[in-house]
Length: 109
Image 1 (cartoon, rainbow, N blue to C red):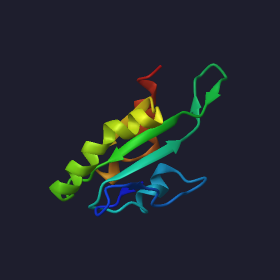
Image 2 (cartoon, helix red, strand yellow):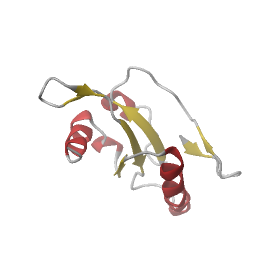
Image 3 (cartoon, rainbow, N blue to C red):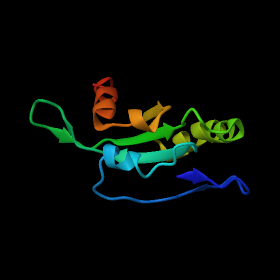
Image 4 (cartoon, rainbow, N blue to C red):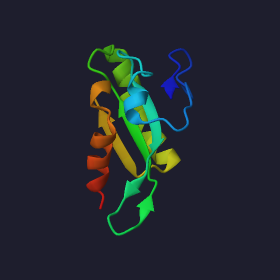
């Protein structure tokens, strides 16, 4: 999702199905923030598999300060309104990997 700078409305920018975070890296702009909603299989080690819904705020270091402030200012209300419980932030699209997300999700167990 992205924020329209003129209207300050959060819009769905792109939708992907059956894509890994590694593949998604190539689709994200390198110097603009984005909000992601992502689900991946999580093996609990006891035979159970869940598919947690994760909210990821991507804010690359090269973003314009006004863009960063606009996204950061919208973050809490978007998370609260949607009821996300697994919320993460990443500063570089290169760090956005399946391994990174699985490590973050293990902190919830």
